[in-house]
Amino acid sequence: MAFSSLRYTMRCEARPCLRAPAKVRRTVSVIASSVADLNTKYGIPGSVEFKEGNSGSPVVVLKHACGSSAEMYLYGACVTSWKQPSGDEILYVRPDAVFDKSKPISGGIPHCFPQFGPGAMQQHGFARNLDWAVSTASADPNPDDKDPSVEVVLTESDYTLKMWPYKFKAVYMVSLHGEQLTCQLRVINTDDKPFDFTAALHTYIEVLAIEKAKVTGLKGLTYLCKAKDPKNPEIKTEDREEITFSGYTDSVYLNSPSHVELEVGTGAAVALDSSGWEDTVVWNPYTTMKDCYQHFCCVENAKFGKAATVAPGESWSATVTLSVVDVTK
Image (tube, rainbow, N blue to C red; front, side):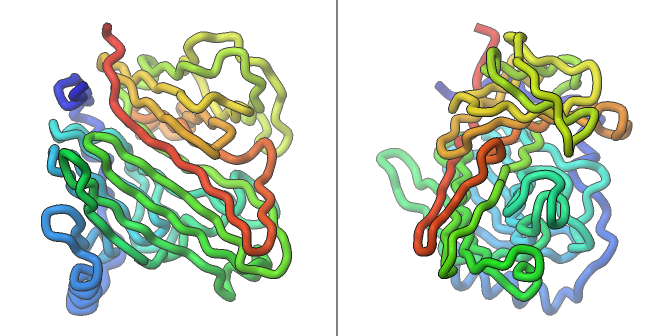
């Protein structure tokens, strides 16, 4: 089914929120050289391109022959755009987002690793506020089109070791298959001792209005309601076929199914099909973020209820594929 024909267009008021003004800008000559080097080493004409993004941060752009596209900042390995062939944007970047590396990018698909939520280290860990390095890019042909992809890596540093005393290699691959976006995270233990971690992809999805949004596929699950106290969540059972929003929502659904959908209010839904991610987080800040809460809902793939344990030389991996589906039939 060709999803590009679906009505996904959002209210025009949401569009200005997708790009916040840059606060700090690097010299053009330095950035031009960096982007040029990346294009020389990894660029693939028509499929994979590197460019200067907001505040001079390098961005990798994936373009599929069908017309879909995706953009990812190397800072935080944060996917900030995924567009359908129609040009409709699926992800959401908050109006308070900054790109000068003073804090993680607020929106798109930020990483939470090696800690999801509050804990012993900084909120959501360190992966979302560090530069990832490009390792490979490809546009391997399938029977119909070329599927562009890019792989980036993050390893330990003095900065990470002070918070999390382990050697590791995180490998993140982002690719387009037709109109679908696939994100795969692999964590390799390069240390001589085992380690535990929690993780999530903090996916912001644009909706027409939060009152029209619905999350389906989670009925009957046990969930941790973190709305009142994220450090001491209430344990509840979901009895709703459709999760709707009339107040602050922060819930972690344990042992969730591999297929979950978010209806965005236009007759379309974003389907998340995952493997390896055992839990699903549903979050909307409601009026605690008055400027933008109406326009997005976070449906996040997570590994939280039971931490991942990785032995030396072993690895853990998880994948999610996002697609737009018609819910009017």
